[in-house]
Image (cartoon, rainbow, N blue to C red; front, side, top):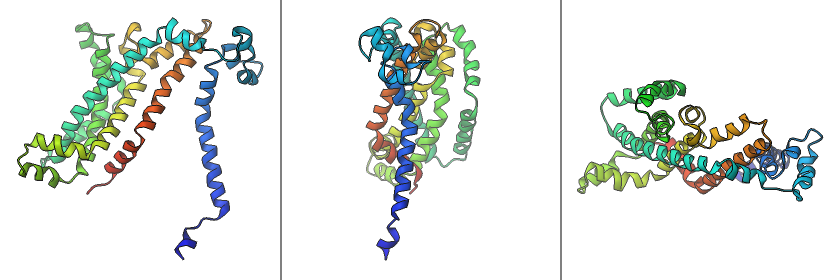
Length: 293
């Protein structure tokens, strides 16, 4: 009886499979097309004659002797120093993620284990700050940055991105800590651990997937940010997203648009690798944060 109830009709399975395949094609096509086009010249990838030129690389072969070329990557990474933007992005994202996680785990644990009413109002205040437009925080920091003569340096974007991201990490990690029974750290304290030792040696290992999940979202916020970094960083200290925008902003120069296409691929591939590498931790972390008990 149960087998017949659980068995799906063939047409329904075919419809579901067809929908999933169609969705995957539609979702993946823009990126796959961009990857393919990054190895062509501008006259092919943005051909006004027809899209088939982007497939076979007619102009690419005429200009370079091959249907594929790495000129876009060379121009972006070497000629236009995209590698500097990659290094700057690494510094900003790692710093923002590390600071946000340290403050978020300590604050989230304290609020989750606190029995005082002010813990609720602190979380509400954090939620209000999270809902504020990012430009509000940027404008509020500009004056002290100018007075301290640090505008344009990486530290400015790190400070603002941590301020923007901290309410999110606080709420996320607070919910993860609530899913861990208080008896766990209380038992550790009975066995002789201090509060911080119980937190570090007992609680953190249990909620490690939650820390990884929150850290990944913090990483993505800093990695993909445009508004904050474009306003606060000088030309020499740009991160990847503003740097790509600068390529597109000077589209009238020969080759710059292909520099942007190559840079987009270079910036996107690490995200796919990161998500694939941490997929199990992300899923288990989100599941742990959704269930209390």
